[in-house]
Length: 260
Ligand SMILES: [Zn+2]
Ligand SMILES: [Zn+2]
Image 1 (spheres, protein in one colour):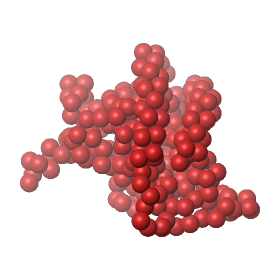
Image 2 (cartoon, protein in one colour; image 1 turned 45 degrees about the horizontal axis):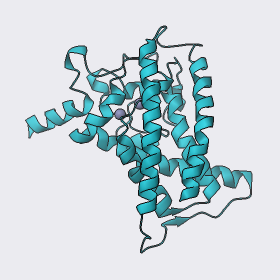
Image 3 (spheres, protein in one colour; image 1 turned 180 degrees about the vertical axis):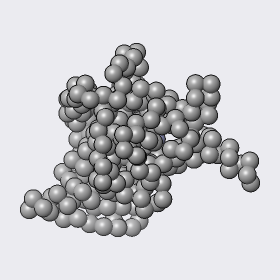
């Protein structure tokens, strides 16, 4: 387990480089021309706190984890061919995204979890730094709900797992970019800035849709997929300036409560 923690920490430097590159790329064709620097600085401050919270939680959870009384559900042997390695990485990413999908869906539908997650949705000017705009307490959930099942239920080669998890953390940076980029018919295959923008949309008809972080196939399979229309880049943030406390989850929850 300590190898996993060390590998994750080593990747922070790579992550920083990727973020800087994406930040520069956003200037090519932004959805919003000017974004407040204060918001970007706030997100960077949150990112430092989130990284610290993640490190602490990983150490606590993995060191306290007792040996399981059962074996892994699936064992993948180390691959030697390039296509074997590619398929193994794809499997790790799919599994990582499956657990992340369900945690994300819970965060939108359980009021106490939404109170933490709504910090991410209060962002009115989506950009690459929004990726790390998460309440540090969300790290308490991400480690046991995403990382732990991945390493517990699946026996995967360490290098494959470490690389896949790093990609799982880095790829959502792309989908938060302030970039007018459309995937057209490829939209359901891989998450892009347009599809994830719908998840952050202020418009009520977009709420509680597109939870996947990497592969929209999970939204398609579990009936939460909503395809964007051509040229659609809606304003982002909570529903309206006058209703800051009423985000997607609480609106849905309130509707459910009042109809039952
Ligand atoms: Zn969300
Ligand atoms: Zn997001």
